[in-house]
Image 1 (cartoon, rainbow, N blue to C red):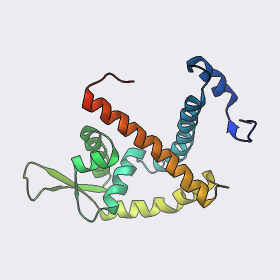
Image 2: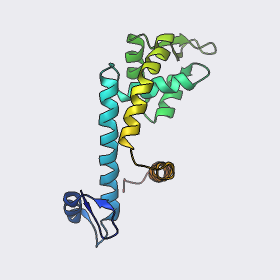
Image 3: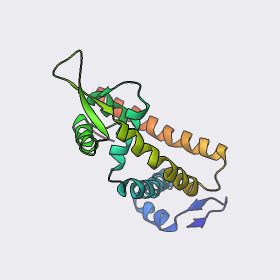
Length: 179
């Protein structure tokens, strides 16, 4: 890592490699995307290490967390939309959770063909055992960040997500080729 003339961190290797992809002289968005990816990978490595030792992928943890905060069982489709993945992907994650006794499939009272998913007491216990080590790990990875900086980081990351959704909606609505 190095610091630019404003004292902000950047990766010289990334900056150099992004020059090849840049149009004009603006590599800022390419460097920002690379930094966002690197930051996510750092957080995900730490998160994966914590969940991996407990036998769950980060995707299964996401599903389990969504089940834990819901006041009722959820359909596979609801979980897929909430997690931003396909129903097929959620089905596999639910298989893993059910196989570990952390979630269970329950019949849908309105539609006998449909299946819903609920967290089990073992699932709640698993999350409770995961809570403290995760809190310590996230505190360590965001050490030195002020509450305002964390809020700004969250905001900026979610702006990226919102922009992506807008682009995706545009592409879906117009059947245009990808950018």
